[in-house]
Length: 221
Length: 352
Image: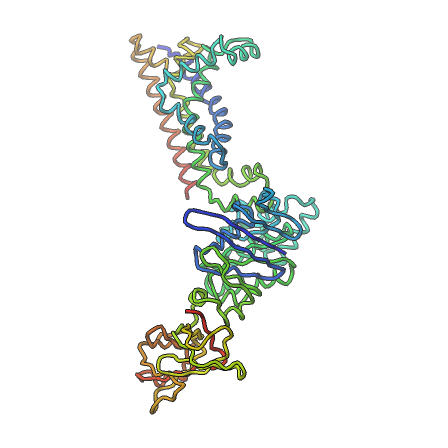
């Protein structure tokens, strides 16, 4: 029997890309939340956390409306890349970002806030710009914890189901990620495919979690 | 020169201080919670005052009225933190380079090497902070704070938690800074010995306010209020009554317990005033009682003796204690009744 591994490769590609985007966006948000005082900070904090508590279908619905072919972000994307965003594998990346970003922001913020404040103040009074303080002091000191958080973020990106099926659909070979493929296999009575994919996803997750714990532990020491 | 007038309200605490300091070591002295560190943080720009004005040489660091509030980066204040705050992921040399970043490359090298030599850090320049001894960390944090040529050095309880030899090293470093850098040094401490050893001027802070200022020796000789005297904690504070005042002879007669003692003339006091007699523990003389005490001697019963490194502290109850030379008291340790004599010229009185 030959297995179709394409959902797995797609999931890995989606997770890798979404992790990159999440990291850039997440670090920026974590920096804002950890270091700055501004109006609407509580609201931003809540908005970042929202995807964690909303049902994936609700989130998926919003994204569908926001990024669909009728919306202006959707049209802008279509104009720029020559194809619509929804129901492509790129939409799966968007889904994975929304699935993993909240936790990445929370963990990175905690990591940044755990760095003794006197280091930042010292750096500032020595004349370093906020940018330099962040890159040369805060980030290196929180680095291991953020690295661990990124690994967990990657693992989580592998696992989105609800939002993905809403905005990327279930097109075998094109937008069908592992989580969706398992659902599909069970529905179709293909137990061996479902079993294999379940085992592979579980093992991947365990390996990543173990590595992340190890990195995080060394950060704490 | 630094001139600061700062007001800042926090929950349950208001800082309201005003002081100026010129080149030399100026001590901000007070109990914890008096607002010393908050004052430093306002000057360094880590905290924004509610109102006031902070001037450093001819630069306005903060002015409440016009809304000027320079960022910490622009203030030219070197800050030595209590925990030194050396960047743990950088070597000592990199720590210095971080602070000298804005100098041109050659100048930067020259400055770093100069600082390494000045603070005896050449051999350990490539080590990270956790591989340095306490003294080296201390020197490195001072060197790092000074490398960018600040106009002011702020030291936040740098000797807290250090053992005696390290403390001595630190004092030597601060004296060296005093010699080599012509800038004001603001030192926060609650250690009186430290204040004496290093301070040229001191400001006593209590509950967010400056309650007394001046050279440490003058302040110790004449605490301005009961609170200051209690804060310094070296005195006997005894209730007394003024019996006579003679401005011509510059003398007075005070009643303390059953004894009548002579003091100076106290301008502004009246006959019959009830005052606190403030006299240093080390200024009183004690003798074992021998016959009937004279009129100027106070009879007291010894309660206990506390060992001090270089003296004995005799406690007579009722807030009366005397620091005495060990050799003079040791033979009479078990004597119960003593007479105490007051030194006429150093008696200081405070309002009750």
